Image (tube, rainbow, N blue to C red; front, side, top):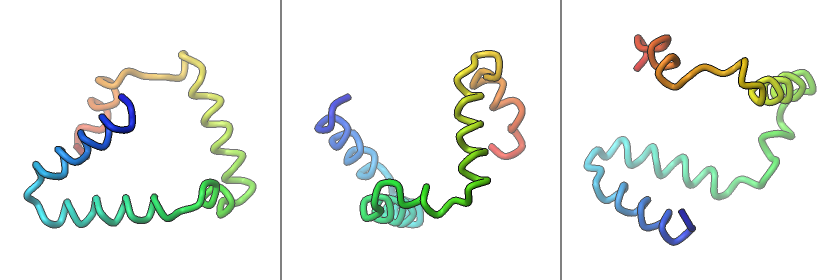
Length: 80
């Protein structure tokens, strides 16, 4: 999906939402993300947090460590 298609889909999604609280949440998220500088969040992390995040990324690249989407939904059904 290219940028134009993505924007069009996003506009259609927004237009289909009647829940004002949900729209406010979307707006706040997009506003914060669009004004944030790249790498800003990374710089706020401690060295320990950075190491843990990099380790998690490395572990996620090994298929042995992954579970299916269905299994994830099953495990976390009480929160869905």
